[in-house]
Image (cartoon, rainbow, N blue to C red; front, side):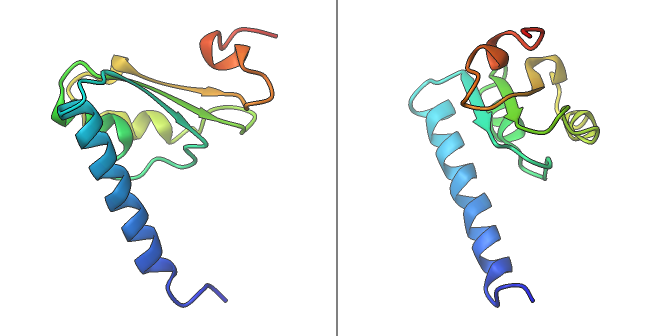
Length: 104
């Protein structure tokens, strides 16, 4: 059984993420984002919010799956500049991998 407040908690989490990315992209001038442990892409993903706020923002999604989610690319088709978002496999245990997805 799911926790009784799981839907409310998840919606609050997504809303918080959106507020943080909007602030960083808009007021703080951040243009590069690293989303670690991104999991399955959802609506209002980091790249969507960042690029809506500051076109040209770049996002690297990193997850410890053996390969990036096959659905990750489909989430990017709604944004005007999908090449500015990338997904790769990696963990904090191997910091070389997110910078160089081809690293052994």
